[in-house]
Length: 102
Image (tube, rainbow, N blue to C red; front, side, top):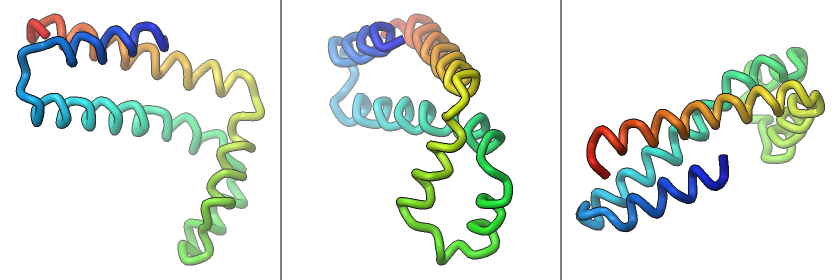
């Protein structure tokens, strides 16, 4: 997947898009990649800890989020699912770029 993503970034960089459009496209790709994994992570986080943070958002810290993510990713199946989701999205991005002749 990393090689696919590098190839996509190279295609965008080599394209005739204006620099501001490239920046926007990079931002959309970045946000899409981040957003795509959250459903899998949330589904595998400890429910009791997640509920506490949902009910008390002021108590949320970087450390508490990291702890939830660490707990969610202890299972290799979750990591495999995240990888599959990301790989699927990267493939879709590649397809769209090809369709748009980028």
